[in-house]
Image 1 (cartoon, rainbow, N blue to C red):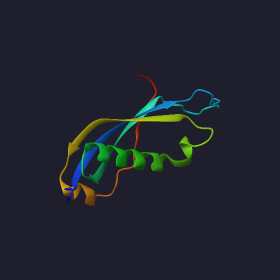
Image 2 (cartoon, rainbow, N blue to C red):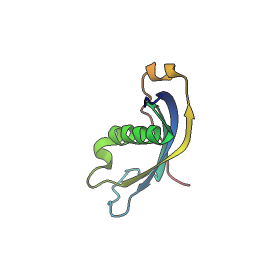
Image 3 (cartoon, helix red, strand yellow):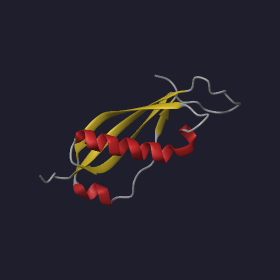
Length: 99
């Protein structure tokens, strides 16, 4: 059985938990962020998992040992035009400090 691959747009919401992480002087500790990713996947859940892996890889060591814990959620998943995969990946995150 062949799976049809599609381009998906995923709006990712990341929640950060800073418990146990010492607060330094002039160091921002945001509560969370939003970002988006375009991925090639066969269904919504596969698309969300691929987007989550990319977000975690982009944050890298910042979320590793001694950093905050990270909980990711797909706020929106939608099919997108395939040409979106050809655009340079936007790795920006919109962080927020208050809910």
